[in-house]
Image (cartoon, rainbow, N blue to C red; front, side, top):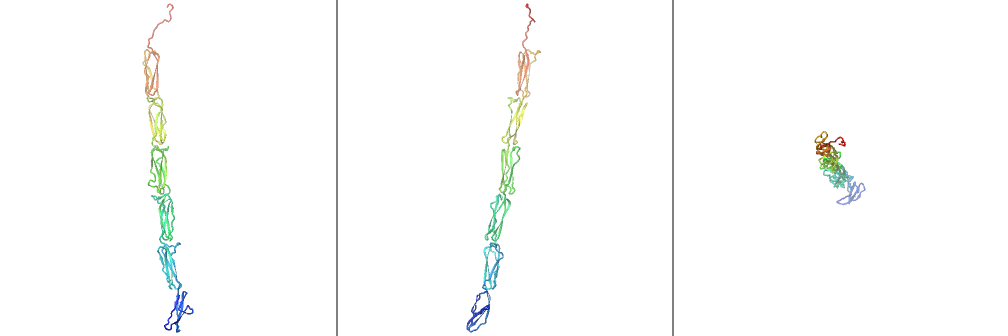
Length: 465
């Protein structure tokens, strides 16, 4: 700095001015140049042209040409990315080793969210020198945004049947996103939650969660069964109802048709019923019940004797009645064995057919007449012979026939015998079964001619008669 000296003299005028600085020899001049900061002692005086010398003056000159120092500190340092996430107080520190500080800025609180917000402070020393400092503040107090969403909607019942991936979307309009959660894949389970936290560059964080995520990857169970067991042959003889039992331990069976209703089967062989169970997640399982064999139709049966009866409906020997059985579905399981009938009238034989389903049918073969006993027949002349066993007139032989079962259909008519010796008449009886019997009336002697009488000597007469 330069100190200028000015002297006046109203009469003779000023001849010269002298000064000395910090004890150095005085020199003439009116301009004192002080280069170094500090406190300097100056002595100066003037001499007029008449040779008068004024009293020497002294002055203490304080020189400070160096600006003060000023620095700052933050009540919290920024993070490694240079960001703060709440209000920060900037405190200034001022210093001046020469003239001292006249003013130092008060602390400043930076609360405005922004990138590159500048806080400036100025220090003033007692010499009027100034120094300023600025600090750039990046302030983001607002948490980032975060949202979570599944990779697809659940079904109408709120369930998934495969793994579901929950993705996170993060945003921050000021400091930017430092980290956003990775997608989370959830497998089987009910009421699951995926949670994540977003972090911005300033260190703010926000969390979200997506709950009630239901995943069922296991198919339901289903089992079907008929309402009763088949018989030993594997057949039913009436309609069969096939019912299904369904269960699901996680999502549960869909109440809207998730388990098949009972199904009724009618007559038929090798039938199957298919059923499908569906759980609330849409998983399905199927079961097949069968083969089921149902025969509701009785078998057929017919019976017949081993031969036809005669024209009068009779047999004269044992008759065997045999049965013929048939079933076009389950097949015949049993058919009555042949029955042999002996003698008797108006006989009947019952037969039963059973099919493999347990259906039965019966038939009766009736009006079977068997007469194995020949009729009886006896014959006799119309009168007894004389004591000599002879008849002297025609003899009529008559027959009596009888049959206690089928009855007589033919009996020999009376037969008249004329003259003859040792005659015989044969009679035949026939019953309705064509059995026959014969009877012979023999030894019949008939002589209707009078005897002839002749006389003769017991010997011939001699020649003379």
